[in-house]
Length: 450
Image 1 (tube, one colour):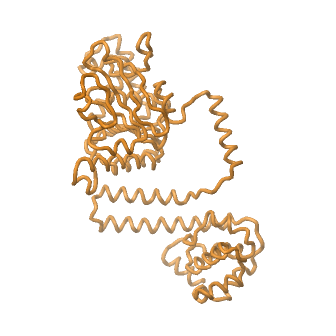
Image 2 (cartoon, rainbow, N blue to C red):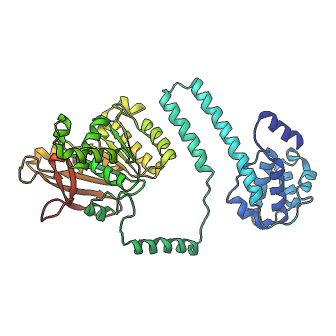
Image 3 (cartoon, rainbow, N blue to C red):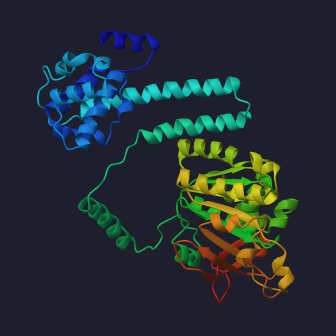
């Protein structure tokens, strides 16, 4: 066994064979430890192949409800023809020599898991290097694979345990009590649009929320309004804009925040009385946790790489994509047809929402079907453009509808929740202030709630 330890050291692979021996010996002395160990340790976590074989035999004996001791383990290894490969009957007997009966194995488990994690990190790093040298994939794809591999390793090191109902009830009771004190029905990310939050309980982590509308109705304006409201609460927002530049978006948010005509800001002709408010809001906006990416070409792979880094650096509350049909597909879908490409993009966005446990608000174009049905007709799910998979992948589908040809009604916007996987569907109203490209809560008396 000393030669095995030396071989591992020569390879530069982290291992602690004494901890592995002690863990195996502790189980053979006290069989009650095995359940605790099996929750956290797998055979592959042990560096020694001999110890892996012994661990599997012990596990098999437990599955058959048989006693686990040096005699039964030796007999089973003899029957499988593996006894000599693990060091013989003498080595099995030596495992329990000098091992006291202990009631917990946490110390040994932690040592073994730490070494296993380091070995996996080394092996995956080698694989990443080989891919970088030899893979025919594009560099961004290799980078995305590398990030997924390392993050997956981190997830594997966090092993969940079964929890009894009493423990769950205690935790659930504390959560319920907190909610009762706060008097809120928001369980996700609040948009600060009261009726929308009431119907959705906020945008939920891991959900793909699709906001769809015809051109010039105000998709970007509503998305910016939501982003500003979320950022005001202190939650970081990542905004991917494939249509507008970062500075353009900033000026639109400045108009919203300062309530100054957007066209005046765009032309640089601002009244003196508005300058103080603009200056103050300029400073306030600069401190908001909003991160804008205005890359004109974007794939879900690129987006995932950027979001993982952002989440590690400072957290993530909401992701906005403006808009879905401008994204680029990857792989064979990109070379086949547009429907398959969009389907691949929507699947990728949903996968990112789940992986990062954050709501993704993806803007989407509608087909011309509502216009063909007649003036002012509201959109329906089949109007989603390019792919039916958008409807399938989305947890929530919201249509933004505004009669832009009606001078009296164009400042009233309808939000139609056409699909909600875990909540009601229905229609609510917002006020749209065209001068500031700003959406706000609707009040029948005044049409606008500041």
